[in-house]
Length: 254
Image 1 (cartoon, rainbow, N blue to C red):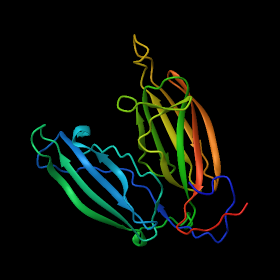
Image 2 (cartoon, one colour):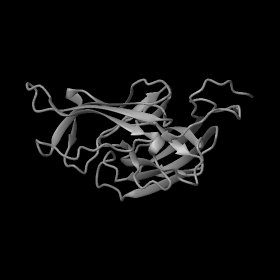
Image 3 (cartoon, one colour):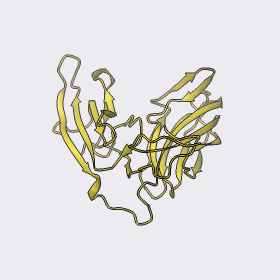
Image 4 (cartoon, rainbow, N blue to C red):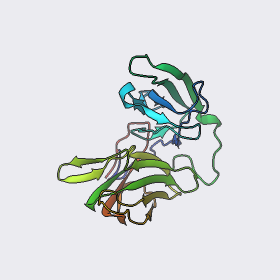
């Protein structure tokens, strides 16, 4: 994250950015379900380094039950710049059993040409921000699903599912373990979070009724925002830090 608390030069060279929302296996010679592991990485114009979208070992495979089900992405770890191309490298295998070597299901290279992508007339080039977020548990616990999304984009990203993900201790704080903590956001579109509590199986007895909570954030050029959330059996603090995305090393100004 850069320029979160201080100003920046007006000549800072900003570019378009991109989000990879989902990856699906649309066909399988083995049919479904299949146990998938391997890697999906992406490179962009900032440094061409590997940024993992999916990274699972043979022992940590992901079961895909149909062509409609997406892989659980755990990245990228930073915003992606769409200056010219995004390069996606795919190396996925199917686990058959413990003794049989993994069978290749998808291996290849895909380039996304940012120069040819349609531009929204209402969005100016250089208006994208990097949003990094965290959810701290203030009281209780969470059972259910949390999604993050962008206003106007129908598909939302599942960032937490309590049946598969857990919590993390950071010092004296307990935070919800998120599958990804970074998204790129347009300045003129709301950044949304949806909490859906599906009943509390941790409390024992009969599950409680489903409850929902939605939080909207207006993106900023720098700084951070917080919101307190009460959903299901817990109270939570949702924090978003806004930072600039740039490809040049420019000095900020106070």
